[in-house]
Length: 260
Image 1: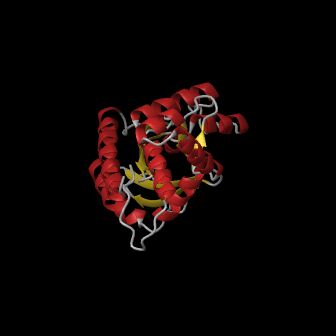
Image 2: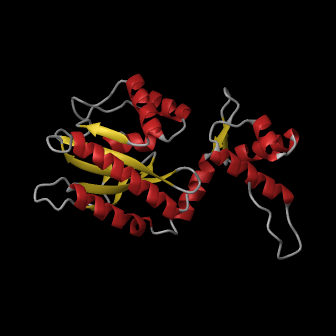
Image 3: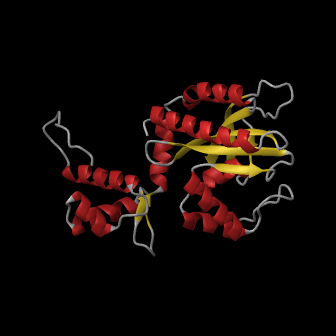
């Protein structure tokens, strides 16, 4: 719960502290808490919680599921969080981890950010030291549904938003192995959410396998993702499993440095 600090001016605003307490509690328990839960946990009356959550929902700081009656962080906080993160040089934090991974597995590692309208943007890379490798320039934009990378970003969206997106957008068939059936894709995203990583076996590019792991920001949303790509004949089995484990460990360390 947000701790109330001594005021340097002699004035304070108790409701603001309560509102931040609500945001922190929701952030720590996404989609699990309703008004009664918040009232009980924070020892704040239901009427006060109702007023706070109503205002925060109107502002887009919270999102209220009309079916479950539970709350989760809203798009306004994601936008503000991204603006806050812009003051942190994400690339300088992630770069050493990417270099280590690319040297260890001799595969190319990318860092990317996500925008629902513009897709995924590669903002940093560490090329494989091998002569024959897969690479792409920094600044390259790849499609929203691009294999493992797309799955990582989409899996961390609220499921109602995912279903709405898939209702409005046809999943493209990049290769003959692409998952284009909506129900199968949603099932795959649920597995990604549960596992904490995504895989791609020639679903985006023929002859290319990939793994992707989200980077969690302090406000509980995805700040970016790192992913590793390799040729499908060699980036498989034990090597791929070890790459998943090492990339998850790197992502956890990066998230700690981001303040998560």
